[in-house]
View 1: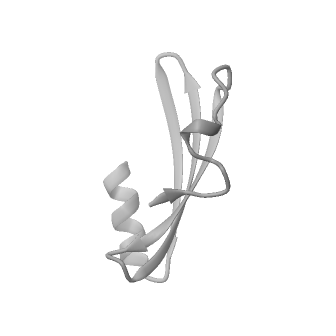
View 2: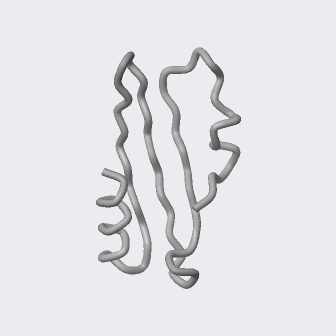
Length: 68
């Protein structure tokens, strides 16, 4: 998966405590998949909310479970 719309790590200012990361890719090269991660930093923790979308619910759940 790759960052979309300039939401990758190079786009985050040092003083920012929240970030929206958008990812897109193809699961096993064939199934288009999108991920939205909302990140919040509060030392020493990072909180993440993740939403995964694909045409196959099982794949969406597998990707979300792998990250969580």
